Image (tube, rainbow, N blue to C red; front, side):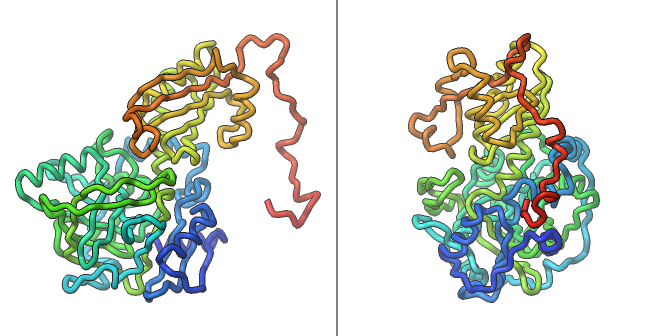
Length: 447
C-alpha cells in the first residue's frame, strides 16, 4: 500500500527525501506546512526514533488523481461506479503487517515518532490514523480518519464526530461492552478515498468500495486481539477497545480551518496489540488537509448528483480554501434563465456544511479562482444575483457558526444572460491559443 505509493511518487519525481534530522515536535510539521501539505516527503531521520515518517502524501488534488488512475474529467463517474458496484475483498492468512506482533509492554510514544504539530496542541496526536470498526448487525466494515490524542503508554483519546459511530459507542456503553477497533497507518489513496464515502448515506462496506476502486480485491488479515480485518500490506496497525464510560479531556488541537478546537472529554482507547512491518514507516498528515482532499472528492460526487436532477451540470469543485467542505464552484450549461438560482438552491440544500456556492457558465474554469472572480465581477449584480439564506444549520468546524449555532449561507449566480444579441458577454479569444506549446519558444522553462 504505502510502499507502492512511495515508489510511484518517486517515478513521478514528486517524492522529496529529507535526510536532515527533524524534531517531531513542531519542526516536522513546519516542513510539511512549508509545502502547504501538497508535497510528499519521506523523513529518513526523526529525532528520538529509528522509524521513518512519511507525510504530505495525499494533499495535492492532481497528484491524487494520478495515484487513483483517474482524470479530472472521469473522476466523478469512476467514483460513482465504485460506490454503486462494490467488489468483494480477499482474506489472506498472513501479510507483511504481521512481521512484528507486540502484545505486552505497549508504550506508543516510545515505539513511534508521534508529532506535536502546533503550539497549543494539548499533546502529540496521531492524525493519519484510519479507524476500523465492524457493524454488529450487518458485519460491514467501516473506516474513517480520526484524530487520536496520545495520552501515554497504551492509551489514546479519540474524537468521535460521526453520528453513526457515536450512536454505536453509546449503545455498547449501555450494555457495558467494549467497542473493538483497529487503527491503520500506512495506506494508499484507494483506501483513503473509500474511507470518505458516507456510511450513514450508503451503508456499504468500505473494504468493498476500496476493492472496486483499485480494480482487484483488497487483501486483509485477521487481527490478533480483536475480531476485525485489516490490510495485509499496511505499515502499522493498532488494535484496541474503547473503554465503556471512561473519558479524558482531549484538545485543544489545531483543526481544519486553522483554529484550535475546544478541550472536551472524549472516549479512551486501550491498545491491546501493535502489528507492524519490518522497518515500518509512520504515516502523518498535517492537520487537517490530506484526508479532506479526498473528502472533498466524495462531496463533489454527492453535490454533482444533487445538481444534475435540477440543471445541466458540467462539473463541480468543492474548494481547498473552504476546507474541501464549506465552499463550492459549479459550472452549468445554462438553458433557462432560472437555472443559476436553481443550482444554488440545489447545492446549498445538498449538505449542511456547504456555506457558499458560486454558479458559472461552462466557459469559466472552476479550478481557477481568478476566473471565478472575473465571472462574479462581470456577470453578476449583488441585488439580483446574490442569494442569502440566514440562520441555517452549519458545521462546528466553522468558528463563526459556533458564535450563534447557525450559519448564513450565500449563493452567487454568476452566469451570463441567455439573451445576448449584442454579444456583450462573449469572451475575447486568440485563435489557436489552447494549442500553443510555450516550450518551443523557451526550451528551458519549467511548466
